[in-house]
Image 1 (cartoon, one colour):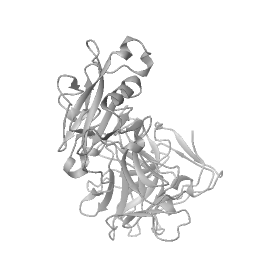
Image 2 (cartoon, helix red, strand yellow):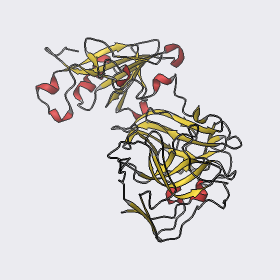
Image 3 (cartoon, one colour):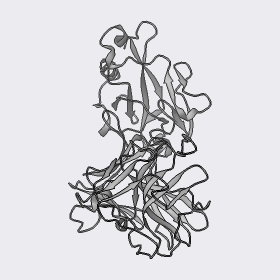
Image 4 (cartoon, helix red, strand yellow):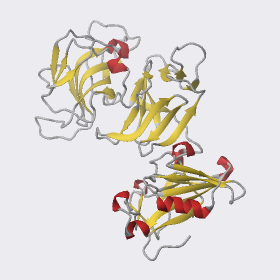
Length: 426
């Protein structure tokens, strides 16, 4: 049995939505909800196989349109049998569409429920499982201050909390996440060390947090007094609409809005990476090179596509470098670095494995070849190629063509591979 140890503050999630005669936004502890149609009469099966079973409902003040529900949701249907239409359910908060009879509907325009928070999303539950609301820890913030991959208007991203993406339509979490540090709102790939692909900086302030307000994503100091530390302007929430933002598997933080005539649609991309969208870490997969949003491998001699029909799936070295677990034998020693002038990498100096300032080409290559954790090195320089900086990387995700006219520096990537013959001398 899945235990929910906090009152689900659906009224808080709904913001200014007022109570309606037909909704049921609260429950008295102890209460148990079973994940069965017979137990939860307010349920809908959608045309694509998705299922929504509401235990609590906060109806739209207009009596029709997008509303908030807590219950069991399956939006990634993988049928087991006719009696169990979905294999995996989440106990979640979702935006659902209700008709004039205050019932959830399968309106084509409205689309399937938009899950905006879930409990233990990496461990979905099956048909017949149950959730229990107990009297322990009646903290209204316990759901609300720990988002998963989405934020609602009025919700905050607190210190220590993360938005973590879903890897795909499946429920397992991805390696991409967004967090607020003391000096910036930043997005990372969970690597060793984490690789940063976006940063919106501000004056260092311990305990800073971000709040999604109507028309902005604002970073505030803990006291919440004085001017905001940083603000990203967003499209305002229109009358009769609902918004939420979601960090998605491709690294984008997209703002979604429901509109009466069109249903749900993305209306804004919150994270603007520099110099363009080729700087997102998974756009072309590992070792894939992004050029004008087209994907390829660094070269055909040393790399091959993971899937020839899907270039965005990335590439693999034909002779991969030995891992750290290979020890210090011949396999580890017989490695070399392939130079690729004009290629760049999204990760910056502050989150690279190691940074070497103004050292010789030979010294940097030796540093990477001697470190089993180093699989690539980026050389950044200005007009003088003898005076630059080296950033060692522990993992290679998407690469991009360098744009010196935009970034004002030149870049060469060195990718480690296993030597097929006697190792080259540097």
